[in-house]
Image: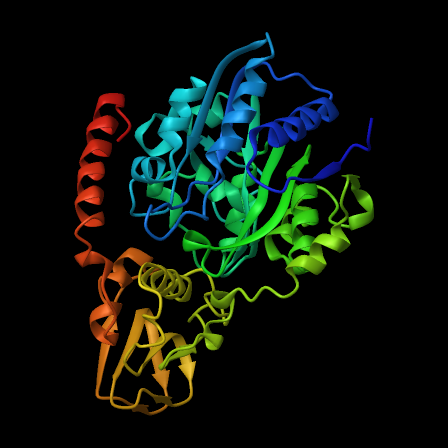
Length: 429
């Protein structure tokens, strides 16, 4: 048997069932533990759209293979797949757009939106932001948890893998709490309720750019680990980061969730981290540094009024998310946008928006300098969600608006109604 903390790296050139099944079976054998009782599989289904976002979620075929593997253990009494997708979009719509409901029918496993189900309020002991969390029933009652992230670069948290996946353990009503300059602390808070027994990462095709509308990069890898921190240590290095430079990973180690020193983890398999890192070193994940976007919009990031820090997970994250969605839906939207400026936080200096609009985003935002602009507009909120900004930014900067999409808007409305009906049926309000 390997060390206490191990990561298996296996080449898998495509989403071929036989190849994926062989790796999954090997991972369960290495684990040395047999799943039993109530088993929960949690993938990443943050967002999906058949027209422009098909690389942001864990491949459903891989999830189905893991479900089949779990069913081989006689001690398993219940199996479910659960997720809480991105804020403001009904998760059930993301399930439909990504093919998860079809996969669930094929593999005889229920697909559950945590927001439509019941939950339990739990107290936390290691947290720094949340003192309590509304824990989904399926997480709270699980005897064995399998987390299945999609490996991607992240616009404000460096990477998204096992630990960042836990944001999808939150109900929408708590998702935006502390989603500001404390986002990395929040991620580790949620690890207390969402600590998996096994991590199976879809890294066959990884994502870059804006993680909810990710651009694909073929890496050809499945990564399996018995420890979420160990999995993220390997993931960080594969994407070109030192583990200590991934903030939520460092915080998790400081809270006692395990060492992030690479030497503390045993790497198994037929490909090494160094070779994988060489494959990804040329990737430019555009929205990580908003100043590098090819657009006439200028961005000014100020600090929070009480923290003295840039609110990386708040309003600017919403700006990145909104623009990332707009440009993914209609490539070239950012490049062809009208000139202007966007300001978040308390900005020390002058702002030149040319003849366009200077948009102040957030309750605390102000410019301690002169503003040159055709007009100045403010959007209030703390923090502001990407959905709210997406209703404003296209009109101010001359970009095509998703809110005029004849296909998607009715789907959002219909699935929102279905969600509310299902919540009422389960008493989940």
